[in-house]
Length: 557
Image (tube, rainbow, N blue to C red; front, side, top):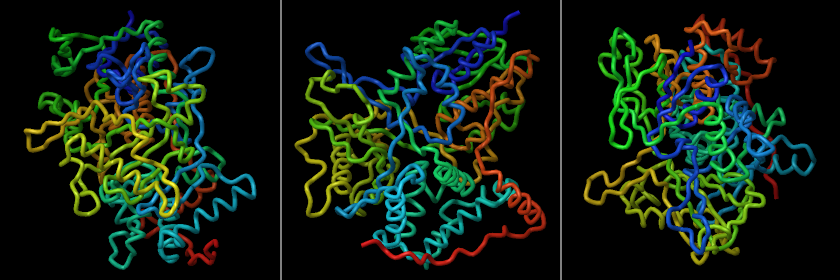
């Protein structure tokens, strides 16, 4: 008899679970609270922006980022047909990242692939030396940072989980040491964590931050592109074709269907209460996969559920943060750099990308009112820090003030002193905040966010649940679940979905193949070092790390 699975949530995790289940003979229903699938990954139209028969302007919840170390999500994307090619074929590599500084100071370009020509080699060398030449990080502190990375590199998993998971990235690299320069704190502690994982260095566990940074460096050394993005708006070449394909294969999607609660019966999930456009019903299935985001899942973990699986109670300890998109539509295309931009000194922890340069053959003048030719997509990762030291925090601003002050920070970082401006006020056509944000002027908090992101904090690994729960028909598929990816990303959501599906396959003793799970890649030559460190850690000894000399290289002219 065919087993029925109810998937609660239609974001990347829910769609990934449906993708794997439907091809293994299960009956699948997906319940999604919004009128479209895709969750935070979806793109959307700017409502009311189209005129004269043109569709609305395309918009993203923030920019999409597909690092080279992703394995699970690309494998799924290769199976999604988009015309004659797959969704994966719509990924294009960036050239590098721009580290932009405030006050019109020179920006630093860091390539995203190991140099293959002499010119590339010289550019990479210059980019590295500028950390201590232009940014003012003392050479001895650069050497200290390299030693910290080597320490993480040669450390065994026991040490990483038992020791480094309990220490913040900020403390692990010594940024809490008062003898360290402010430049070291700003660029190595805060700047790098923001560039790579968009997280707060003082809250991020050193195991997570260090391992992800090492993954980028390993990929760089092995000639793997660090950064890829889609060559069209996300929904056009990924989410919408995926939804259509799953529907054609038999997945039933129930949109505008909000999960209200889980009903317990006989020590398992008996039913789930769903509100569909105001009509409440209890749906039943053989298995239930909760693919809900953390902020929606937390209030649904009742005492009854925890009584069956006490580990699920730890979900309440996990945290979310605001990392929210804002888009600037321009009357001209301003490519800036073929990759992401880290506004290193921005109080609101801004990262950005100029998108149309990657959308080959996509004519923006066919959208909106025909006057838009450029889009700069920005993510605000810090809503708490005052602007320029004494100004307001984002959370204390009106929507118009947020737009104005993000634009001011962009100009402050990208317009060079004494040179032609990269961005001008006359360029602006429209500014759009992500629709998940709502401004409430009469309330003390002012803002609400329907789509906060789960974040990895110090020690959070121990509170994160497994995809297969202690309730025999209940599974979790979301980016807060324990995964090898170990970061709140689309990749982690896809991996968690695969683990949930594998749990169903095991419990039903299914003859179908299990979903593939990949470990984070580490070079084979590290095995010996890490085996030695496992022995040292068991005896309470620190890892063996060779000394790193102070860098002898001179600054470029």
